[in-house]
Length: 281
Image 1 (cartoon, rainbow, N blue to C red):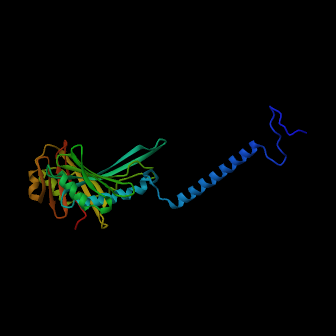
Image 2 (image 1 turned 180 degrees about the horizontal axis):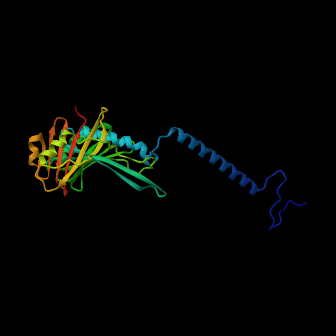
């Protein structure tokens, strides 16, 4: 038989030689199996050895104590100033991913200073924060801004919210909500400092004060007890004999008595009084 190949016909395949199509299929199957094994191995290694790299992998429950501790550090950094802890802000329904909702928590404090002293305060705070927070003060939109990193993807911020008023905060960003956040509000009396301020201003004591607590770096707790004491306007002059003045402005007055800073605020339509005990002493 002639070995010539007739035009239009493929040469025959020997019985011991697989067809080209089967050879390609075998290679594809082998490559897919090898790729699957490699991915499985990398996943196993990552789960057991690699730390999370984005905040979405850390839940709200994991971040709550970090935020509280960061605010305690901020309280310690403003020792000697006129400050008060503010209620926590909880924002539900933010987007962790396009398909998953989450919750964001922000906690902080307000500091009252003489108008024009906002940047100096932010710089003092930045200098007193831990070095690994990499705190710095920069100008944004014409006003000083403090930024720092408290770790575990908790951002620390300091900004001027009004002339003479600086807001310091620590925020989680949007995270999976594995727990509900509840502010610790124990039943507590207003204390002698607020009672004295209310008497001096001729205001009645509200039945239930608002209490905010954060842990101090040394293990104690800082707290603010605040009340709404009736409508403004109100003269704050009767408070001057009660302690050493820290801030004296027409709309806000703060004084120190012992370890407690009492702050009177008339910027809204209601007079607010707050007594704050810090981490020092």
